[in-house]
Image 1 (tube, rainbow, N blue to C red):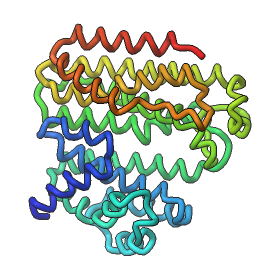
Image 2 (image 1 turned 90 degrees about the vertical axis):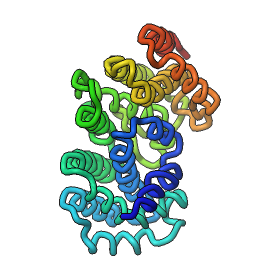
Image 3 (image 1 turned 90 degrees about the horizontal axis):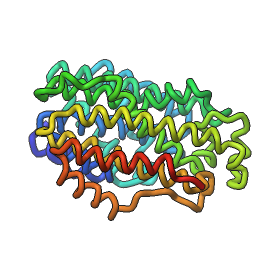
Image 4 (image 1 turned 180 degrees about the horizontal axis):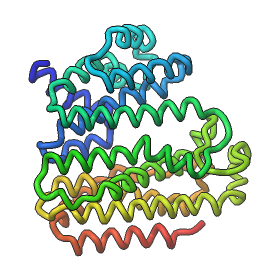
Length: 332
């Protein structure tokens, strides 16, 4: 792959498909930015395959299983790419032009992967295998009964906790002073962010037959008036999400103060996650008309405030503790 093609892949296309997470990717230190950005593109491609409902569920399962094998056994097989093209041959099959372009350039993504050193290739292949396994689990498990607590914990690891694990190992491989980072805290960090997404997106997920919250009668949750029947369970999982983010915060403050770019890449999703949890406690999270979201203006304020405080542990922690307190005190 030419340098120009690589720049386009990890620049314009990455920005097109990563939306708000692009800000986090762009602030990463240069030593790990290409690897983590490429891993994101590959995971986003598999997510597009998993979620594009105009393609049959069976075809998506087969393509995901084949992509998992491709990721584990480079180089890319022509059979996989030849099947992917017809199945997702038009932009209408995907949610956006960027996603369609990403699938069309998947061979380029795998080509770039082959150019990385062996250690980085191994970490990305392991990550992709785990994420696709989680996506296959999701497609096979739903529609159906709600997840159990153990299934939910396992699922959050497969689609997000493993990212924290990968992120930690990549930092330790390429950045100085990262030996003190704890893989388990990185895993909890990822699981916490995924739980926030699950708890925020319940109305949408319920309407497509997915109930990740461990409840006995998921169908009754389609009526927002029934929230009181599961409120205690919902709040317990909000607490779990916040506790996972506590681990993520310990992880963030372990990063040396002079590694400001890496710190910011961790601070932003944690602070946004805490703000989201606080709002979920004040809302009826089953009401599809109440979309809980941190505004773009608030995100920019978080970015500015954290950038000013990035090298000051005490000042960062003061903001964190204020946001964390709001997750406990907010009530309906």
